Length: 307
Image 1 (cartoon, rainbow, N blue to C red):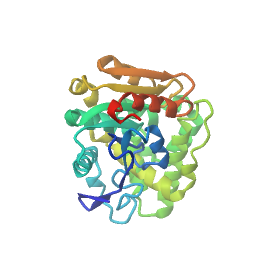
Image 2: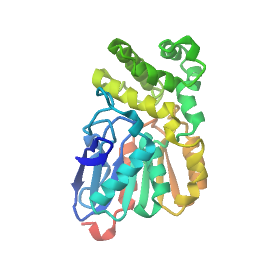
Image 3: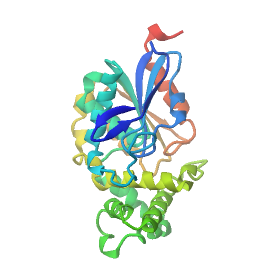
Image 4: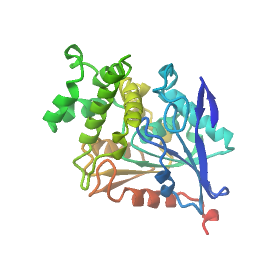
């Protein structure tokens, strides 16, 4: 556990080869936590892999849903500072930064502020914090799933339905009534499952069956999305020159309707050192993702560590 200030203790672990190429994995959500399966994205003989749970979730403490938890100290800027503090704590000079979904947005934000610390990047299920992309998920996807979206907004007071839906849900998830909080968490996670459901082989996310997980996950996602991830609109594309020379592999599923491919495409077009890998049978994850991430991370391991 690393004390990163503001009363937060960050859970971290390392695995693989202590003398290997350093790499850090940034999980999705926000609020998902680092799964054991994330270790599979790196060759353990050639990588020194760092996994950690972002503030307020997983094994870090306090959880965002604990009484008195202060979400004002849980922002993108705080997470970027945490990554840097963890790098310094571990004595890493430069590392491969990899992430998935929200972890992609966080990885780019981190690299744009600390480019000298980043050797290369592997970014799977490319996302952006742009307002139109968040609005696409919480509002425009209703054109594809009208019945499900009607059920999704039914929780929101009618006076707030034309506004920021993620922020409206964040208020419901902070309601003093635990029944309201749980109903809001269930409705939010049902919508999360819906807007990724068009990919081949989709099955419901079993994590959402856990009331504690879905409350925590929904609390952090709506906190970040309701504030447009605490980033100025269009910030990452506007600052792309700051990472233009960092090698990167962008991996995206053709059937990712909730996070359309054009985001990854536009990023790739503006990032000379990037490669775009499109998985034709995948969505926001799914078939071929792990293999594609492994192929990408294999490209950036240092030859001296290969056995």
